[in-house]
Image (cartoon, rainbow, N blue to C red):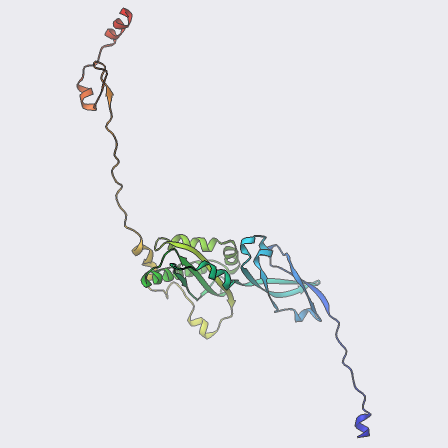
Length: 268
């Protein structure tokens, strides 16, 4: 017992931590996101940060949107990040939905032009309640649009289009031919790694049914010939009576000669 009590306790030395500045991606002009403590730069790589898009873009309309950043490398005390996710807060989406309107949601995987897999969840809100067939047409049409878009667009270009709202506007302009649309949003977007389950569920143009490409054509109103314009008949002045007559009667009425008109003016 005395021998056990006489053993010296070894104290572990605490490693010194340092401050590192976290910078946003080039998409947001490498603005400062914040600072973090770490004992080694290698421990920072792979860390994720959820940041409000309003502080990165300077636009108050983006206050309900969060972007997901991941630290890729650390250079000279600065942690460089890249954007891998985008999502809208659920409380903001609940404020859009009201009685008498339908929401159309989907959850699909796509492959970009630079061979990256993206998990996308579109959100569509209608002006009025619609039938199930119409909602299916809208969902399939959005899938066909996104499948074509991602096959031609790189991941970095896609991030720029989603943050600026250009992709949402393109989708809205096409599906508004099917039903009146109040708004289109990308509820969530996330860069994922390829697995066997995800690989089977990746949407491509070849995997979509023909109905996805015929939805707009089937639901668009038929073209009609323009209605005839109600144009009033042209009238001409009858110089003899001083009244206006139709075109046919004016052609039959005799016109005064120039010499007679000059003589009448001289007599006056």
